[in-house]
Length: 402
Image (cartoon, rainbow, N blue to C red; front, top):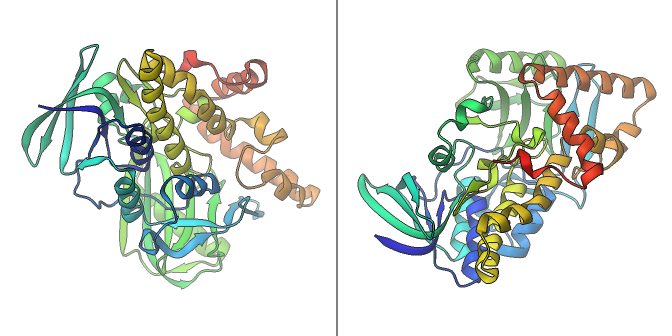
């Protein structure tokens, strides 16, 4: 049995941020990862300014091999069924276009933690003063003993399933897939990430340039047909935007836990086990989860350090400290914040203000019709309740968290 101070499951960006805080505090930290590193990661790679600042401040300048081409993204363009388009530059300028296979590996190495790749998490037993974690390394059983465990293993987290076996049945799941196309002609500005508020295309539809090809991505309720959904989007882009693409040469997809950030239903773990990153439910409005993964990961590491210094339960410290990241992330989905504040890293109110009154009315109408797409999940009242709580208590209720 290997004894360590902290064991982190998943070699993600949130794991790297957490490990950096722990190692800097002198705690022996091991990260286990089921794949061989560097490993492929399904992700658009468009990083927000806040995430970029975190990487620079904590890990240093990004090497060229950690970036796709184009190497940066200027901002986001929203497209609507009324054919109104709203380009919005990121505050602070362009941001990196991360190649997650190499950027994650780079950050993990710079964290200073020990990494055990090809090691799959199997289960855990929280015994009060320590946690015993069962794993398999290249098929052989291996056991770890840790004071704390941090689950940073993404939306389909096995650590969450070990703590809450019924959790996957309690939330709606979406399939998010992207296909890669050689380009014939693409009028979409390659400096921007393009997002469609169109209920006929899916719950989450996007496109952008990467390494000489065009990504066409679509998210929808799990169980729908990916190929049919994708073809519908490709046809729409051709007919409405003049985007001409060769048949796709590659595709990939994964299950996603959209929802926790919208309705303040995060999962932070229990006892000596903390959940962070997208596993906990953090996701920004345009589907960028890297910046909140980095910050929430760092907070999980800081909480472990603070709990030891103050001799307090780690969950108590973590939930108190993570409230700031909850505010920042859930604010992005809060309709009152969107209408009267600037919760995003691109100026939506200013972009809306540049439109004519007629186009503003079209955008608001189209956004409402898009939001109605989520009606079947009964999120409306929960979103409204959270929005009204925000100005009253200055944040979001911890009682909603698991």
